[in-house]
Length: 260
Image (cartoon, rainbow, N blue to C red; front, side, top):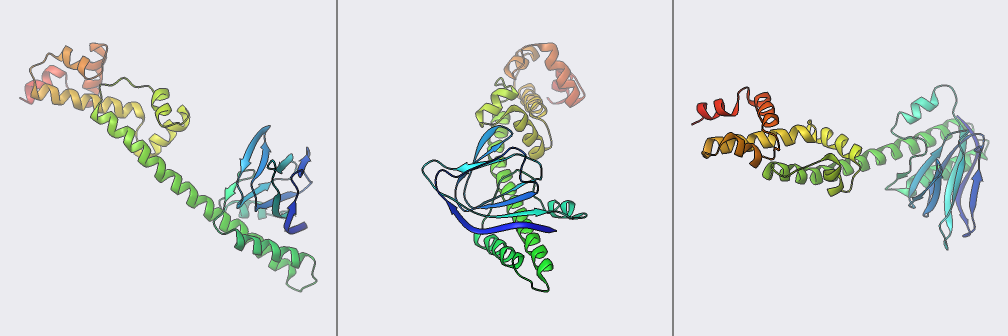
């Protein structure tokens, strides 16, 4: 790994603004101590303080201070050698993805060490720099994984509430877009997380819940199969019969005969 330049505990006024359309010619690691605005693919993204951000070589670098504030950061310009890029990003980071970090002081200490070693003639200078960078990537990768798991657990609770509602009121009309809106998620993101959490799609759960509800009505009431299909959320009886057979292996009338 080659260090091009590094800086520790730099603070700038509110007019601080970096705009490098072609990047800096190397990779750039930024350890934010203050909130900042990063422009990523033409979109402004507010990145909170105590975050890490890595630019790849050749990508535009556009970031600035928050309005009426100051900008404080540590930074390292560097170039990967041999297979280092694959090794370092195998630790869980991605380019241009902000990572909130729990212990900013430890990572800042690592940058400080890189800065002092870069200006030294210590015999183990290169090895110390390499391991300091490895520590930064390793710990930041752990922070990212931890945050991802926390988000997954939070979403699991939210999606479990949705799933419980489906099974308690299966007759209610549902769409992916409408259900995703309930939990303030995009339709695609909702479908992905729902399948990841429960191993089935939203519609597979809806069908299962409706058929189970219909089975209960067939066993405990004398209502006609047509009425039960409507009470279970179906607008078309033929659709109800087809899905009922797919899950139970028999028609509604045959099911009633074998369960009374």
